[in-house]
Image (cartoon, rainbow, N blue to C red):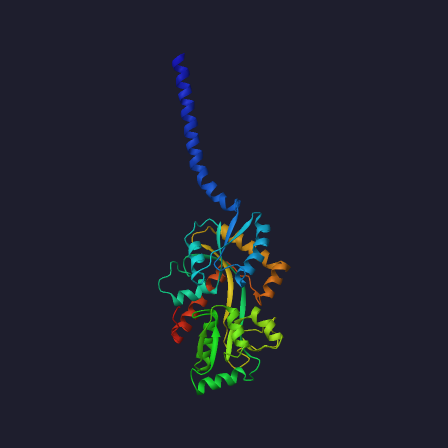
Length: 335
């Protein structure tokens, strides 16, 4: 009797253990598969690789609030500036691919730097899963109000006497620098590059007449153009800027095919599950449609974009190829 009971208990224990083992084996894949569907179950970190207050940061903060509402979790902004965006971008590339560390990146660290630096800690072409291109930002060529030369006349003067017509940018290898060098190549004119540390000193020197022209992002230039302190010569986008509707494009001035914008987009570490990428993508597209986000983008002179992950992947590759071409033709060296 005793033996029978212990035997049946043992059998029951064995049965429970086997059942538990089978359940664990069977449940593991289904739990793993279910995980992205639950995403996110905790706050999402949005890494902005620039200091607070700049265009990328302002755009990221405007979108974070709306993205948080869509995801049902808080989206926490973390500014990680340094090395023209590479510190922040590199930290995301090396983080766990679970959708909780997200890069809110721009043109420099996601494309241009790959053409400038041989020893990057990450490869922008292959170390991220692209989520969406969010917005493009045209640049503007400006000249001191006290001068009257058109862009065409400045180009003619640079052709006649190379390195006598100066232009300022926010640094060697910056989007502003590449935009001017693209023009230089297309116009077959050699300008003298003067790098600055930031937009503030750059536009002030342009206003003061210390440069023949400057390449600026749109926001710092608009009030100075409207108040008559600077003249806007051309925008770098393929279409005119809403913020500067009277300013021609380079194509209108005789350089068909000229286009050079800065931009922002979102990416996650390589290997992040597709379901998570798709959920983030849907949240970003919803955020992009919000009127307050649209207003914040317009204030930055931006053109809202929105793309599929695959479109963004192709876009980044095309941007790296364009940067490679400009950097090699102009012989640009990283600072």
